[in-house]
Length: 119
Image (tube, rainbow, N blue to C red; front, side):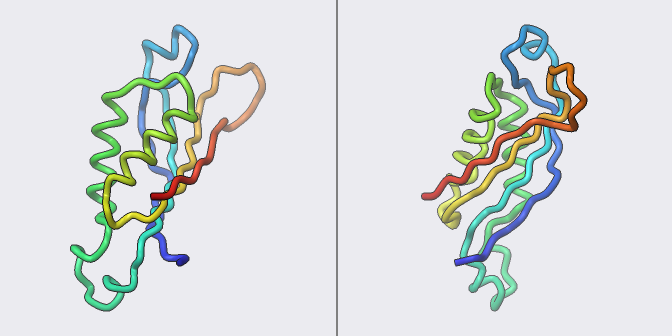
């Protein structure tokens, strides 16, 4: 199956990092998410109940991730995938996490990780 719901450039201010200053100050992150779900039924019925409501997903991620703390990008990505996989309609999820202001001296736009988890 190649069906997916795509969420791009979801921006959040989160606690994530191992340095002391990263533990006390929220930092900007960007998430790109592919939610693999069978979209055959909603493509016919046009009913929201037949699919994953991405508005609900975004609200749940925002509320949960902003309330939690992470040291590693890997854990942030894994937690995001865990939360999305709680929906029984989701078959798999791919998550890219971009740290927009990494604490390095080099001139880079972001650092990040990408994971894919299946049910």
